[in-house]
Every structure is written in structure tokens, then in C-alpha cells.
Image (cartoon, rainbow over all chains, first blue to last red; front, side, top):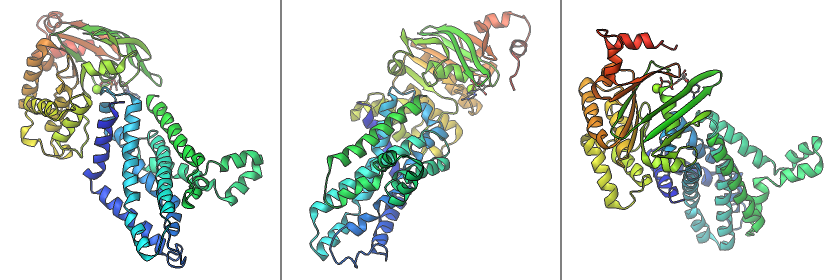
Length: 241
Length: 240
Ligand SMILES: Nc1ncnc2c1ncn2[C@@H]1O[C@H](COP(=O)(O)OP(=O)(O)O)[C@@H](O)[C@H]1O
Ligand SMILES: [Mg+2]
């Protein structure tokens, strides 16, 4: 596992070697803040100083942002041929997968944490519940990791970044929509109710919700971590195929 | 140093490599010669562990690539065809990354290895330039620098002089020759004069099969008076 760190370092710094990273971080911030202040966000309407309106958009925002970060993870290596270089260096597939995933996750975490000034603004306007702020940040970071695991896997399946993006977006959207009653109601139409319920348990919304209420339920943490573990395992399998 | 027995690789219904066996000893420079599509790159990819063979084994310094790939990769320096590299990095950053993965983590050990590779491949003038802005010849040298950074006992070079101008070709050949004394080297090429210039042995491969394995002199002696490329043409058929 010693070899994870140089892979991580190269990949993480790689985000900042192109202007794309800076554009991305700023766009992320602008989008999340303006969504929160928009008439859908109701940041002012709420009358309570909190991050709920801001974080209410995170599952949606991350749905687009994470595939944008994740699509290049393996597709780019395959397109440019560097995958041949990488896998003839003395590292295992698992080390490469972990290094790249952790770098992408760290980058997304950075993007999420950049919204902390928002939290400070709220603190200045009112008296936010810091417990909720912290648990919501934790939930958002875990959710980003869950999405990224899925995206890393889909990006290992193709060398075309556009296909990779669309596949990731589709897979992540399904994971998100599973939490909506209308969507699960449709599923119940042709699946046994137990199966539909079980599927609903895989939704990101279901597991993210508790965090925004200040509850850190080990079940939710384990859900996101095991999703990451599972997708990374499949990622190794897909690359060694 | 390198032992290859019965390597086979099939893509779809195409036998890219069809039972290739040979060995390379320390101090030898083996020229892998053949028309495009003959299976040179695929054979090298199997030796370096990037492609898994359908049958056959490859061992480097007694270690089987199938059972301990990481140990084999430590002993190898590999220049893949068309020298892929992370284009957004500078030459120095890229070689620094390779040095770290190769185990040179301490700052001074890393600098020593990077400086040595840059000196050997004469990259000093572009060391801070990003790789994507380099000319083909310089990119090729970066790939070469990456392959010899850890001074490996075995070098596998896929068309190392491809895209270089005549002067650069001669420089690279001299470099390979000077390093080969204590190494085992395999290089692929479709340039006959290259084999003549530096190789101690030549293998001609055609449609995935070895059709000749001898010294350049013995190859020449096959039909005295004929030019080397005539012998080559009589032994191979172009795959299209
Ligand atoms: N990834 C691949 N998928 C399908 N066919 C391949 C692949 N790689 C190589 N081939 C085929 O295998 C044959 C040998 O290719 P290669 O080893 O690259 O030849 P060379 O390096 O001698 O030019 C060619 O016919 C090529 O089209
Ligand atoms: Mg080739």
C-alpha cells in the first residue's frame, strides 16, 4: 500500500495543473450558493439560520459535478495510453485504483469545504446549529465519495470521456431517484414491494437526509463506505479484465 | 535474464502472437524485427505484464510475470510504443513521479535519479517544459528517460528511435549500446540498419511467429551478396 501515495499525489496535483480545476471550483461554489439563494432554495424565506437550504441541493449538484470530475479518472489514461505506463510500473491495480479514487475524493472534499464561508455567513446572521453543520458536511463528503466510486467504475469501462460522463450520470441519477416515492411507486408496479423497498434503501437521498438533520447514523456511514468499497472492488476487476 | 516460452495472444479471431519463444542474456541487445502488425508490441506487452498471455510464460531474472508481476516490473524499464506520458506535467515533475513510484522517495535520492536520467537523455534544456508542448523527438526521449531512471537490469524498448531525426537516432543508438554492457535489452524496430548498427542478435517475426533468430552476420550469410532488406522481404509478408 506504500505505492498509493505517489499515485495520489500525482493525481491530486494533476487537478491543479490545468485551469479546469480552478474553473470547476469557482463554478461549484457559484452554483451551490446561487441555488441556495434562488427562489427554490429559500435561504431567506426559511427564517432560520441554517444550512438546510444550501445543503438541500447537494445531492443534485453532486449528481452533475462528480461525473465531471470522475469521467477522466480512467478514460483519460486509456485514451492517452498512459495506462500502459502506469500498469508497467511496480504497483498493483488496487494501489492505482485507491490512489486515483482518494485523489478525486480529496478534490471533491476541497470543493465542498470551500462552501464553508457560507456557513460562517449563516453564523453571522443567526445562530446556526453547529452540530448540524458538521454532520451535513460529513454527509456531503461521504455522498461525494459514493458518487465518485460509481463514476470511477464507469470511467474504467471506456476510453471516451463523453460516454464515461453519460454512463456515470445515468448510474448516479438512478441511485438518487431510488429515494423518491414516485419513482419507487413505479417500481412497485412491476417488482414485489419488498424488492422495491430494498432498492429504495440504496438511495442517496434516504441516506443523506439524516445527516442534514444532525443525525450521524452508523447505518448511513456504513452505506456510503460499503458502496465505495464495492465500486472500487469492481473497478479493480474491470481494469484487470 | 529474459526467458520467453510459447507466448500466445489472440484478439478476436486474430492470432497476434503465435507461440513465440526466445531468451536474452545479460549484455545482449536483441533486435525484434518485423513488419507492422507482426506482433512485436503485443509480445513486449506480455513480457512487461501489461497484457496477459493466453498461453506461455515469460520470466525476467527468474521471476515469472504471472506469479509476481510487481517484482518483475521493478526489474524492468519499459518504453511503450509512442512513449505515452502525462502531458500536463513538466519533464521534471513527470520523472519525479516515476522516481517516487520506483522507490526514490527521499528528496535527494529522487533528485539524483531524475538528474541522471535527464543527463543521459539530454533533456536539460526542456526540463521545466510541459510534456505536451515538446516535439516528437523530445517526447520520445522523455519516455526513454522514464525507462532507464532506476537503472534497471532489463530494458524493453518498443520502437525507441521512432520519430527521431537521423542525428537523434544515432544518439539514442549510442546510448543504448553504452548501457547494454551490463543489461539485457530488447528493442523492436522495422528499420534494418538499426539492427545492423547495434543489435547483437536479431529475431524476425512475421504474423505472430518467429521466422529467424540469429546474429545479424548469420542473417546476412543466408544469401551472400543480397542486401539485408531483401532477406527481410523474403522472410516476411506484410500484414494488412
Ligand atoms: N488491443 C488489441 N485489440 C485487437 N487487436 C489488436 C490489439 N492489439 C494488437 N492487435 C492486433 O494484433 C496484431 C499485432 O499487433 P502489434 O503487436 O501491435 O504489431 P507490431 O507491434 O509488430 O506492429 C495486429 O494485427 C493488431 O491489429
Ligand atoms: Mg508495434
